[in-house]
Image 1 (cartoon, rainbow, N blue to C red):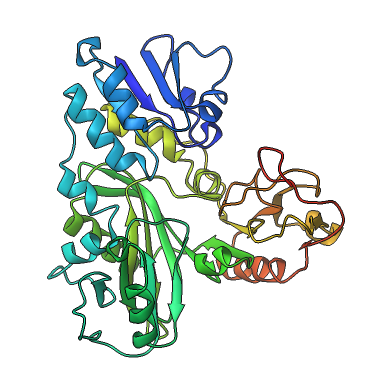
Image 2 (cartoon, rainbow, N blue to C red):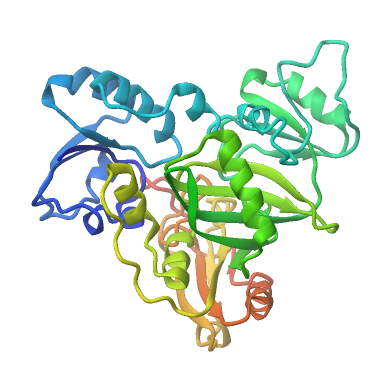
Length: 405
């Protein structure tokens, strides 16, 4: 098979060689220099670097001809969802319609598609759709967020609907944002696979604090929980309404104190942070390899042995640290050698930190993997970890990628 890979997700998160026999198939990778540099040196493949100022999809449509005969396309990142549609259309490769793909990228389209599905979702309105003299059909705390954002970037909670509306009207590009009512509850996420429209190998997890807390510079955690058929039925209704029928799915939703389930957002791609590893250990399923097999129409790999435990992770952000302060990391022995800690990833204060929100274990100051047979105990352990002062500003000037302090 001749396969074109739009390579945007770090290679170590996908490990394409685990799913694709590069000796048996003709594989071409196209991506930015930093992504192409990650490819294993001995991997049999074609490699094309796209310049930092070039539009990735535009470069492919200009430099890759339909006559080259690519049979399949893999474009597995968040941005790759719509990018992949452009490339498939150019190369004549079948795939989902643009309308369906927008439902998993645009937060307004997502919720519009849920109307009449029985899925509860926050009341919402596109930021550029409110009349000049009108208001919002709710009061109280209100969220202003990008329609196609990820990692809670640029998400702001306003105490009143009026304040959120005023902030939305003041934006340079209100058409790229939405307003929605604030929902008070735990954030849960479902991670699994969709094959022929059916949700398979799904695992549900509950957050300690929220992704928005992480974006604002606070450590958070997430841990797997016992299967609840209410959660699975909720996820299945979302997938059916949005017509998500293939590949990885990462669904985020609220569970209120009254145990009401409320949709937050969904992505038709692999979840971030430690999800690949925790899912593999809990179920034996390596999500990227199974997604690739599903998308290419191949038999899925045999699962590995499962751990028999629930897995989770605690993550400490670094994007909020000021370059002039530098940072120090200290993970005490009672955490590093804790009986239920599987692995501690940490920087030592000398490595550069990204100036953007990152969940990658090799880019943030501290990333702790832990597991336990009881998800309640695991939650308590992780909750204690994120309260510990493991990262603090100090000493050496912080270096950003590219060498700038």
